[in-house]
Image 1 (tube, helix red, strand yellow):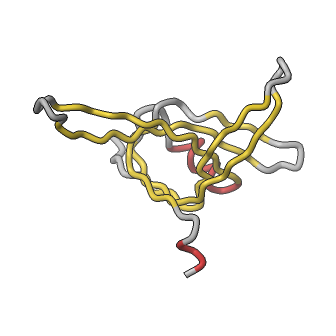
Image 2 (cartoon, rainbow, N blue to C red):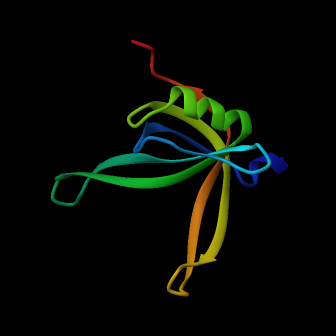
Image 3 (cartoon, rainbow, N blue to C red):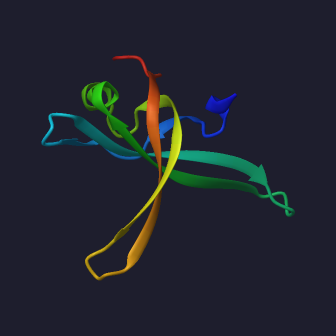
Length: 112
């Protein structure tokens, strides 16, 4: 039951080409964004589409797969956990960011 406490599952398209970094210890890191959209009708009967953007990060072999097979527009399914962190920017302002650390990845589009 502990695995259900912080679990995120998303299926959608990537909004950007992955940003890949190789760290000094040889480990790879991937950063990419994913959009999810929800459609509903408002009180006037108008169709409304709301899009939310999610920051994804991945390490090691998962980052390798993202680097080799993913690009902007790729449809993927991910499973991971929410990570909240903060940092101080160049102007000295404390910034907060929420990311999804990807543990599982499934490529959904077929090769052409």
